[in-house]
Length: 302
Image 1 (cartoon, one colour):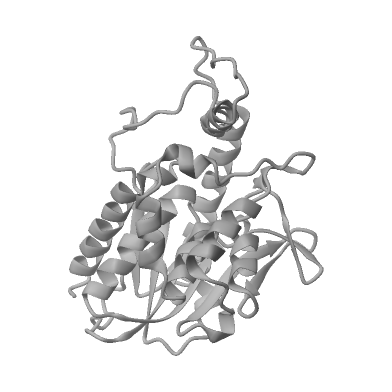
Image 2 (cartoon, helix red, strand yellow):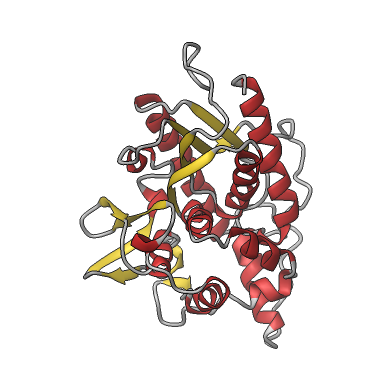
């Protein structure tokens, strides 16, 4: 929420946008950008971590609509086939096939040539510090920023082992302060749940955990028979515990960043909007993003 004495945001005004980490929830940020554009706000700078870097980089390159339409044309099976197993590597997937598909979709621009100032945030795993990627190949920067530990392999860039920016900067507010924007709008991916406590989500993962289920489906689709998940256990699987633990950590760090460096406006996406791997729910998530952005902008008096 904007401070009570903050001047109102005006049509056509320059704004900087901070896009948070959140797995598939990050697709809601497409709807946020659409809502801002519908109100004629001029996005002149974007900083993003993880899925926020992906959405932000595509918007900065002028390809966000192409990406949205491409996703809408994919079913679950097609999306899962974009994940190539990281055999012998320290993660489930290597990410090569996904990035190759995105390059084919959106080209290979350099960050410094984009019409909108863009920063992808990653983490140097050995030095334990944030890395702001503001020049070079766009997909190198995005691949580093989305390297969720255990899910995608770390990405070596400029002699550094880089992983998901959400590890230290799930809401990279500081990375936008270099812009000449008049206002800062942040999209927090850890908003209050949209369902009452105890009410199940619309689509629950199979027993054994979210990504265990996803990986099993992928192997089965490739032709390898996979034993069905046990129906007797309700315990979370390893990857589901990993995902929820990372999400809990990111939510707390984001709260601290918002308190220490508050933006003029915060748009909050419900943290239970989807499971972190449900990228096929793009239509629903974009609609959630537009709704939450409109609510926040209306509440700010715009």
